Amino acid sequence: AVAPTVASPEIAPHYVEKVNKKKQTYDVYDLTVPIADIGNIKIGISREELDRRTRTLRGELIRQASVVAVVTLLLLVSGYVVILMLVRRSRALEAKAAEQEQLARIGTLAAGLAHEIRNPLNSLSLNMQMLEEDLVGDPRLGTRRVLAITRGEIGRLERLVTDFLAYARPRPLERRRVLASSLLEHARDLLAQQAAAERIQLRVEDAAPGAWLEVDPQQLSQLLLNLTQNAFFACEQRGFGGKVMLRARREAGQVALEVEDNGVGIAAEDREKVFEVFYSTRKGGTGLGLAIARRIATGHGGDLEVESTPGEGTIMRLWLPEAEAAADEASQPAAAAATVPASGHPLAS
Image (cartoon, rainbow, N blue to C red):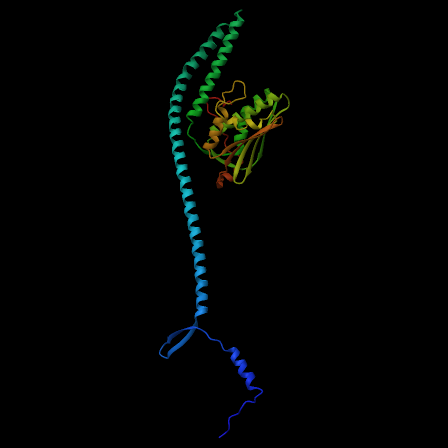
């Protein structure tokens, strides 16, 4: 038999001390895990490490639960605020609808009253004209002058009633496709003599060739005539070198019809007032023209805006959605001109 090897006295104590240093005592959980049919495996898990991991997991779960709770609370508060806003908006819309219904009833009554007033006004105007003709050659010129003034005032009342009816009972749109430039050219042709008489340069600039619009030509013609005549009045107030430009241009799928003048301009505080009912700076104006013009613009899905510099001039700009040109229209050089109604008169603001 081979004798066991005995460690030398110099090495053995050092080795034993090193081994003793590595010895640690752990408090463990013993877990037995079955492995199929092979047998079981026994695992020892440190209690201290398991407790540490459990505390970490618990803290993480608490943090996540806190975040979820805060987010849920914020969502509930936001939902409450949104519902409250919707309720208030609904109440405001209901109140506005009730007000609009009441105004519609009043408007219907007023329109009927205005219609009844217009008939005797027409008769009075005709009778005054006949009296004025009978006084031709009469030495009483003062009487003729009074009659002329009276007939002029009756005519102004008639225009006011007619414009009020147009505002209270707007005519339904009769849309058709027209070239934007044809609307401007038509307005220029209708007002050419007036422009020449007032020594105003009236020109058309087509910066949107081939731009088609689907509009009611008669209503758009009324709108453009009104804006152009207002431009004439602004140039007349300035007193020299009147210039009015009718322009069509494209921008972002829309067509802008512009009436630009070099007249007296509009003060900043008055730019929105010009669209108010019965507001007018024009002598003899009804104060309904631009209100009706904005209604016509809104009815076509467009918008009417004003850009002005006092002392330099004004641009009235009508934005309308551009209509796509059909295959047969793309090759046409021009469209039939729009026409104004046979009866009635241009709006006056």
